[in-house]
Length: 278
Length: 172
Image (cartoon, rainbow over all chains, first blue to last red; front, side, top):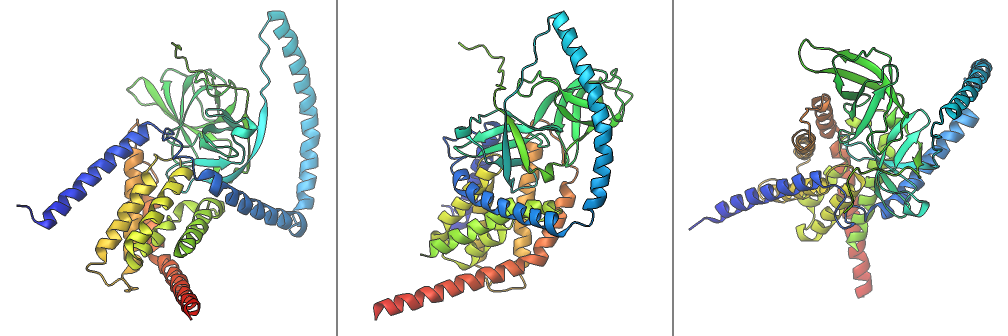
């Protein structure tokens, strides 16, 4: 009744359809495949770690022993900078003391000191369309899913998958990442979404909010993943259209995510689900 | 024994792809280096022996990527099946046509990725740099894939002749 060719064509179309449905499901329910989505990391990551260490070692040897031409100039520059920083530090110490006195007066809750675990970046996402990294700390070191990953200058992302000694981190620049954020100066709120390489989209910022280029954007703490007040980036573009309730705001990150080498995982900051446990 | 070679080449390519290439300043413009290997296996090696390697490669890449689970596996399996189908009408050793086959593979992968990030994601937004990245990757695949294909062909042929020699010596 049907030719062999016809059966093959129909079979291929059905398979493509099944494949698309499967990918649709997996894109909605990430990280729930009975460990199948984590099995390779413990095998591949040690090789990645070895290669990464060798490269950094070679880089270190080059920059510390052979490439010393610019070091003297840099040293002078850093000395000047240090002098300025010492002065600034004195001022900040004074401010911190005043702040602590005022907090005591107002009976403010003491800000929690987070326990940070340093981790080395051993690998990056094989595809330019997704932004993840693999770090050399896992379950055994106390890393759990959803823990925030930061560096002193900025938020980096959150833990997405964990194996015994390695973890996969979804970077904030990934399109699937979202961070509840606020503008430091005006306290305008919105959601930071990863966009093209090198910038974020600051969504749902009301048109009436005053936002200027250069404003600092920090985490608001309302997403339940990232603690409040962590730096994210600076406003690099604002488009306020004549209609609509939101304005289009672009934010440039403080870090180059391509050059991440070490990060810190905040261990004692747990995610708040805001869902009642039955 | 041939599986040792397949696994060694695959592991080397994966390490190159996820550890060394990201350190380069133009890493976005470098295409998925596993595509020439998947197509090579589909075009030159016995299909049923290499299919498990293709699936394993896809699963490992899915593990290392932040994309939806099964995305790399699907792409590699379809490319592999396409390569097997091409064997029915294309002369596999035609070194002039092979770079175009690899470039088509790279283009297909990019189309699938762009489709995934635009259609399946909650807020439909076409990536600004998508066309630039895809074009550069396809062009670089056209230019550099013959080097990889020649290397794979050479190493696999050497391995086969070495294994053949060993088995003959063992038979004596």
